[in-house]
Length: 370
Image (cartoon, rainbow, N blue to C red; front, side):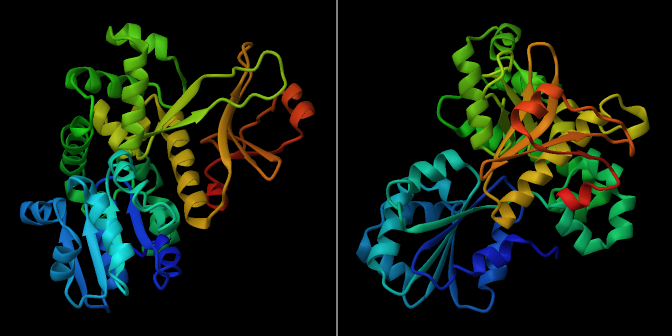
């Protein structure tokens, strides 16, 4: 089993009196991780995919929960977003059942937050688990094997089942992308046009790393702009995509309101466009590399507790920088290049205005950055 970096962060808070919430995409190992943490304890597992469990917890009061939990000191509610009114049951466990430690997992930040935001405010630690990180992967297979697989991972991604089942990669990714569309996103409130959602995902997959215009997407899909914004928000809350806003402070011609959209995993992106051709047969290597680096940096920041704001930068005259981070009043600017030794000139007006730390991330140094 691949060792997960998040395990140590969760173990630090196991002995507090607050609930532990682990959210993230489907099939990234949330259940496996929590069971690994609890393996030496006698715990109660409540599965949100089990109809009988759902029926009990949806209407549970304090008396019923005491009978269900009995003498168990640890309770794990898996896929909690599938249980109606689960927030009430979770609040009772935390507030009324003294000595019981609660663990919760979920695959939809929208539904999890709706269920726990009010009921568990101040009563929880929340963590996000991602697909396998490069650091976790390299630690599992070793430097040489990981390096040999870099191009392969750019195409097929970092999902645990994909890494562990290389003979079945295409089938696994097809199943994952279908479950995203038909089990998670379409079950969220307000999704009434699944064909539009599929077309939107395709459009976004073909525009990875580029600025996305909500107006252009609305025209392409023949829907209104607000619907586009709503669907993109739902896709982000379902852990399929994430966005970077544009950075703007002082310069007159900076782009102020646009977004770049990335996929949580390269393999899911490639499954959506149905393109698993090898690197030498593709024209989107730069896109794959950028999506990989930005998603890996996001994992690194989350797991190491590096709190920062992430952006891209661009002007109306087409000067741009791939990625920025702002933390503690300092700005870090990075350009992404697949080819080692590529020359990059950062815009002089950006340098003089913001005095950033700058650098180029390529195949020779990406490990130090992610």
